[in-house]
Length: 483
Image (tube, rainbow, N blue to C red; front, side, top):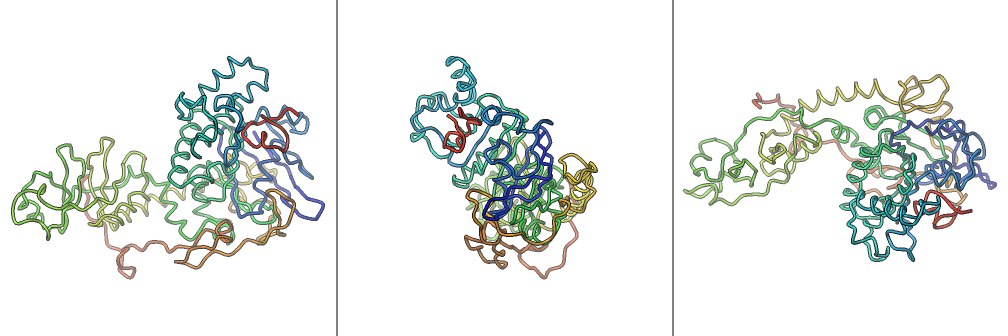
């Protein structure tokens, strides 16, 4: 779908933003470009719609060199979303979304009808159609930006850090909504971010760039976490990549046991008879209400008379991952994770020891899957592809040497940027200038979070997730220009 053949971008001052990039992105897939500041990921994205022209090499779209298509025409067929949305402040939300259809000659009635459909698609009520951008929250503006990029139903969508300007809660909501849209629309998406967690959550494939515009590794998220190509990639992904890999292990495969679960109407004596330090109180539908510390139970009455400690959080067998299950165990006052079914009823419990054995086996299976399906150089051309088996170690681009290349600002102005800063020591917050170049190092949780020196314990027996070149218009998701 999108192919880079030995593409480079060099500036007159000697800055190399992108260096001999060869890469092929599959149709209908979501490819995330990630790396430290100045590594050329945004320059790479902007070469797809000719906002930046390559100094050498060829960028092709569906087999056609994009230089054979007039830039405005090319851009009107490519959606473009940036951070802060880039909406036209003098236009209503409806007219912002209708921009590209109007540029393509659609009648105003048809264009606005399409805009209304897209507002609904991205989860915005019709009452917002006549508002102006300043009347919307940051998250709502970003949804409008996505809707506008989809205005003419383009096959390709370019997204340059679209969710970075909103708070973490809104970012999570936008990411979930975005994944929902992609499952429905199946667009070919190129997505730029500094956030490796966002890349792992969203991407079908991830391209990691090093400073100097070199492609360090191109792989599936699973394989990137399991088999980083070199020390640079491993440091960028972060020392907690083992924990992150648990995101690819489905909670539905984790074994649970019945555990100390009683209805809230049960007598206190029943709770004591279980011989457990904590008892989980549930309602008539087996929905969890909270944990009761047996030592603090009243002399008589029922569990309804006891003070219940918060659950921490539960994990859903359908939809959640082993990472969520382990987190639930660590946050629970009883150190027991509570798994719930689709109706929110307790399906069973498990502690970190019981989860660890199942997770270890399942993680090994994920590694095997990544080895088989990992993306890399597989077509004999030296081009990493998103669908071919890997025949080069770790999906490393041919000719890419280990270590950082010449410092370069590949993102905006052709000025050199400082080399990537090192990761912060374990247990310390990364400084601002280092946060983009390396994830903070964290210690991987031991088998027993409370006692790192404790040996692993065998698992218990078990019973039971408007529009121009270089101006605000083209940066606002219009995907084209009038020039």
